Image (cartoon, rainbow, N blue to C red; front, side, top):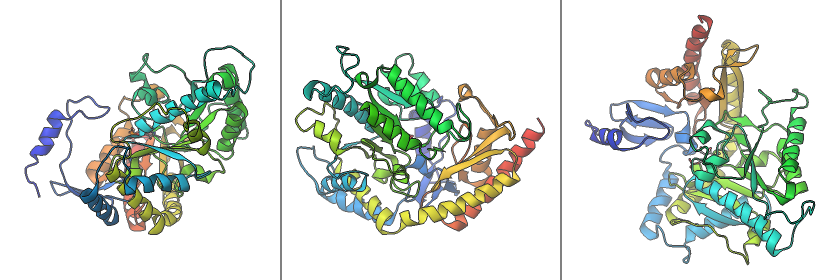
Amino acid sequence: MSNFPEFAANQARHMMQCWSSQEGYDPIAVDRTEGCWIHTSDGRRIFDLRSAHECINLGFNHPRVIAALKRQLEQVIYVTDDFATEPTGALARRLAELTPGSCNKRVYFAQSGAAAVEAAIKGARLFQYNRMFHEGGIRHADAPGQYPYPYKIISRYKSWHGSTASASSVSGDPRRWFQEPLTVPGVVFAPEANAFRPPFGTPENYVEENLNYLEYIIENEGGSNKVAAVILEPVVGSNGIIPAPPGYLRGVRDICDRWGLLMIVDETMTGMGRTGKLLAIEHSDVEPDIIIMGKALGAYCPLTATVFSEKVSASFDKHIFGHGQSYSGHALGCAGALAALDVLLEDGVLNDVEKKGQYLESKLRELAEKHSCVGDVRGIGLFFTMELVADRQTKEPLRKTTEKYSRTIVKDVSEFLFKEKNIYVPSDKFGIWVVPPLIVTEQEIDWFCAGIDEALDMVDQRLCSR
Ligand SMILES: Cc1ncc(COP(=O)(O)O)c(C=O)c1O
């Protein structure tokens, strides 16, 4: 064990921390990780309630995954895609078979969620280009002669798809604003579908109203001549864990079909069992055209996938998929992902998520009963949030979207949980994320809920004394 964590000082001095000003960067030296826990050099044992940014669904250092990685390290780590390796081929096939729809899919591998989103957007635009120019497939010739092919991407407010140029441009999140006004052209935002705070409509009709408005946007953006695809998270992640309301995803699919648009679902955060199924889209009866997977897919390695349906893949049989990067199809990452799928599907981890999630939800609802600062408990599987509000009756939020970088009581909650309770849950903008590794036990759930209970006492007291 290191008593002198010089490496932490090096990291503090020389590493650029994400989304932060660098003064005061003070990373905590870690000796080892195991299961849901991080063991620090100064002897603390910290529970990771955000599963390392949702990357370690199986907990840290799962022995079956580590063994597979070690085996692969001795064989082939990476060769270009002019060569084939056992794990790369096997994973491409496995994802083609496990994801909804025909198995005749193709998978593009990258190393970050954002890069997988870039591939999805480019793939969708090239698909539409091929359809128009090579296959004469203009569906609605209601605006003939218009330049040049469908390229617009409809995304939604309250979404996050990553930090690279296209990915942040399709993100309805304040982090996009760092990029503006130089965001990539051709992105239009639709409202999110949110049961707790519907942007418009009534609790009875907000889904229908939302879908009507989506269709209105598509028509007024040029319809099939101009719009290539709709991209969405089936459960909104970074912007507050908002599950799609019943009927919404089906409605989006139908609209995409009516207008000849591709439906892209971004499962970077929701995939690999997080919601109780391998993919969150499986809770609906919808087959997307493009599926993005990342984070926990690579199981400790940066490995992400853009899964193209049979229809989209076929477009590139004879026309070039004009996209690529070094390390695509990385054999070590693919071996990790295959082992992670085995653990999820064969060792029963996925089977237990729903039951554990129900237990977790019941505990969170008890806390919500007790604490008036909790406005909403929502989520699915082991993907939950408690949204905190200044006033439960009016649902007055603790902050506006434009105040994303200002300090609020939510930051105090995460600091309290970290310093006093050894629970790591990075500050969220709306409330408390409860996203443990899928291997969490009921005892661990009881333990961290007791810590959250104390944190909520603090919030209640502070809000009352305002
Ligand atoms: C839904 C979604 N898409 C894409 C990304 C970007 O992934 P990465 O940070 O690996 O680029 C994220 C990251 O949080 C995400 O939640």
